Image 1: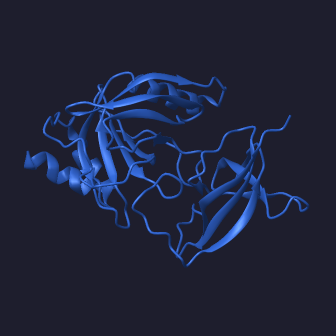
Image 2: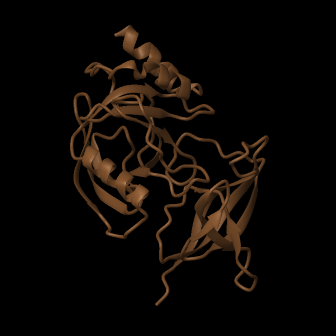
Length: 268
């Protein structure tokens, strides 16, 4: 079993890109003895996980949204990822979905998944269709990273078709066991009910935001960590703002972490 767990542990470290590529010479075998728990005692309550990497069975990578590259694929587990069963909801590339989940002896299964029916550009629809198809069969847990340190808890699931899906627990609403960095500053921001197309490194979707209802809208190019944005709903949020030291060229220099949703308004 060591020959499987050693590369997976490295996969889940910061050098994930190089390690997964190195493992791409063939599909990884199932690992029935892989733990379905992340090995930490956590209080009850939701946890939020983002899909950060999707490696096909042939070793090629799917292009997935994250960071400034659009709305990420997020799974919100109502009772936490370590719960034996519960409900799950989130975003699947284009639409929102909801359903049930339950642990198996080797991983996790999803049941009664239903989603909204909004049309999106074809790349996002294709990605969403592939994800929902994969969720129709159980996932096998092939690697975990239980650390609540800088990289956070992580998990790699293998689909029935042999694809590897790497998820990372995210900060903000839903993440437990994470200390809030007091170096940031709190602020109130108003978020418009619809995102708009904008240009960063490439074309993307941006939030429109302002600091009070009587000033013009501005564009926000980054994510709002912890916000489960619902199109058609405007928000008044309390966030913590951080400066990002030495950000990559294609990433924002400021990030927002959601502290509280103070108001949700759906236009009549």
